[in-house]
Image (cartoon, rainbow, N blue to C red; front, side, top):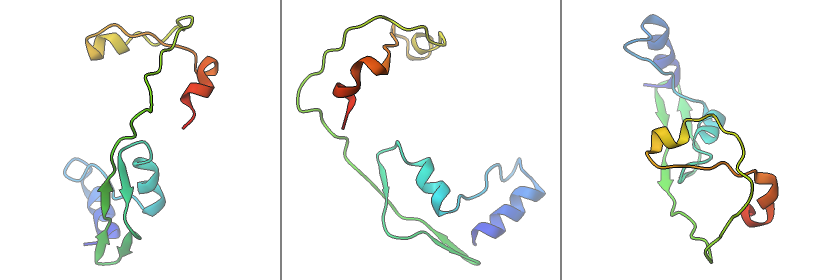
Length: 100
């Protein structure tokens, strides 16, 4: 059924239905940084919700990029979650390398 039906289920029991379905603009925002692209329009009718996405390939850099600069203070969780040491470099020093 549609998004309104799922919203009513969420309102009745947010444990059984923990999330509501996003509208078209929210869905686009959710996948903005993921390798997914919406195919066509999101169908958001009373009895039908349909969103079709296509996985897009990652863009490969044309050459290896080497970055060097002062390490900025982070939140202290990157290395712990990833299991390898990490360093935060200020984006402002590398804007030309990071442009896509």
